[in-house]
Amino acid sequence: MTTVLKSRRRSRRLAADAGLLVVAAAFVLPLAWVILSALDPHADLRVKPPDGLTLDNFDAVLTPEITFTPLLNSLLLCGGGTLLTVVCAALAAYPLSRFRSRFNRPFLLTILFATCLPITAIMVPVYALFVQVNLIDTMQGTILFFAASQLPFAIWLMKNFMDGVPKELEEAAWTDGASAFQSLIRIVLPLMGPGVAVVTVFSFVVMWGNFFVPFMLLLTPDQMPASVSINDFFGNRGTVVYGQLAAFSVIYSTPVILLYVVVARRLGGGFALGGAVKG
Image 1 (tube, rainbow, N blue to C red):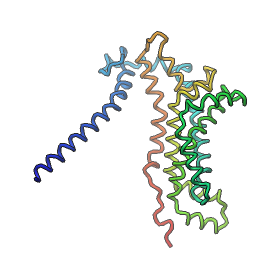
Image 2 (image 1 turned 60 degrees about the horizontal axis):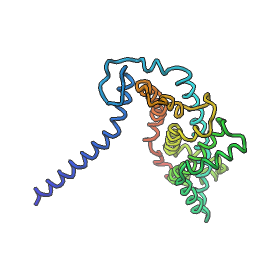
Image 3 (image 1 turned 180 degrees about the vertical axis):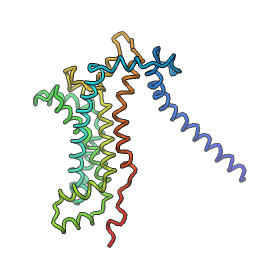
Image 4 (image 1 turned 180 degrees about the horizontal axis):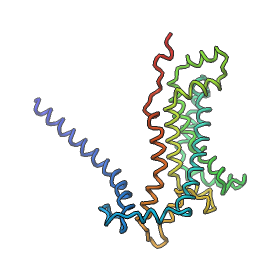
């Protein structure tokens, strides 16, 4: 019986390992194609060793029109949208976390419903509204919509992290004369640094890869972000310069990777609340 059980466990372990390898291959193969094709002078759709190493693909795309201007537009749009999202999410999550009201649950359920709405379903009324208020083809209008579209999930995340900060710390600050806003800025947000980092990274990554919103709301080519300008690598007749596309993809992914590296320590740092409420 023991031998049979060990055999079954071994079979299950092998099946689980095989499944994990398949999932890993699904992620690794596209990444391998991007890296190898960026250095391949004769890149195509196949994942293969480069026919010689070259940096010509990077030289071809490192121009203001192709890379620098779109990346700057992306940084402005996503950076502004992320900052606005984090600030508004913190201000909205604080009363939901700290004060009890019969409207909290309906409000949270409404937010949850808002996260389920597909972006394509609301773009037509949003486009009509933006035309009326003269926000079409403006960076600030796109930033506002980016922030509004990310706020529901950001509020959910921020509230869950904020619930982990002991309220006793704020009560001590209130006793010393601090206002609710001061306790939020000086006590709650510093203690939930990992939570703020999670919301920041998540919001920035989602905005960074968003193609549909800037494609609909921006009309001037000089304002297009990199997520839209990458479409220019696909020709009208199906011709694609795969090496340059891969090189641009590597450059396009760099800011997201750098952001994650910068906040990685905070993401794994915990709340560091040990001993804060003793005595």
